Length: 411
Image 1: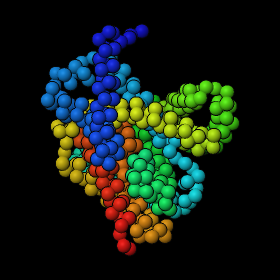
Image 2: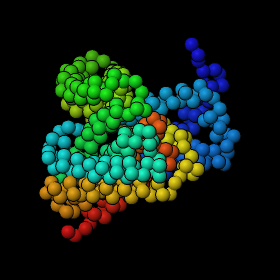
Image 3: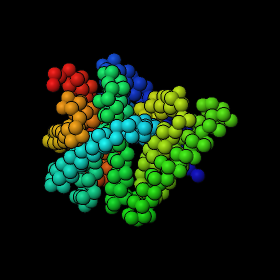
Image 4: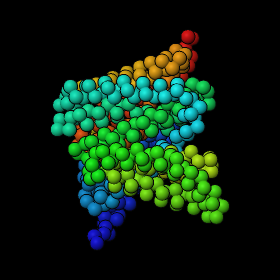
């Protein structure tokens, strides 16, 4: 069995230390500027990657992130675990009772805010595959992937913005949050189906068995699975050391769910997400327990993933102004107008619909994960992926001021 040698262990530890330190520095700078931490963490990765450190100190950057193959493989495994855990806590944020309380209005807004970007993204990518940088050999799937990537809302980011604006507990805020939760669930189900259809996908049991098992897994996890969680959690809280028992069993079950969905041909993150939804909706999972899970993952694993984005591509050499411009314009306009028209169809006031449009345009987490998976499967080019990251940065930075401005409108 091959193991890391002395130098590779040192290199791996230096990689993780550098990523965590830079992520914390840039996240704190972002926080001082009243921006989401994810903005700082992505910028930290760009600084550590080939874009800046690789340009100014190429030998040092190569030593740190490119000279030890086994250490890089180990780091990649760490990043994969980080993505799984990131989707697990994203699932924890989906509170089904809030979704039910907002009912059809949230569903209409969510569906409209997804359908318009998916259709527009698909048409643009399918019509101009070489310009945009989608895989022409897997054209339909790659174009659908792009449309889905620009249709996703960053639930965690928009929730933080709403809290900062004191809108989180208002009717408009709850409507936006409920719609964002629905988008998360629908987005990952659609993503799973797309990935199972992709010729670039790995393994699996075949398209239709995979789709069928995906739907069965989702239904069972949100019904029988949720019931089992409600029976087991009180025993865990009473009989095991707290919060150690809860943490270890939650993460173990998360990895089991992730491994199952990976086995049937869907990305592991889908299983982690659905388990997170089931666990987060349990009446026996206290807010304090949720906070511990959030703090543990958000401050250790999430930064590792977001920093790793900047290590994968050169944001200067692979930057294409035309591609980025198309992605930003199509992504922002279709998402905003989709949510706005969805709000109007749901008989929501014009002002509230404008706020919902700006709020649901917020990106910065799962859309980047989608883009990164597409990049790894060879469905999209580096320049398209960079455009998606820049779209996420712009929308995350702008959503708060725009929602604040819309809230002051006299309509």
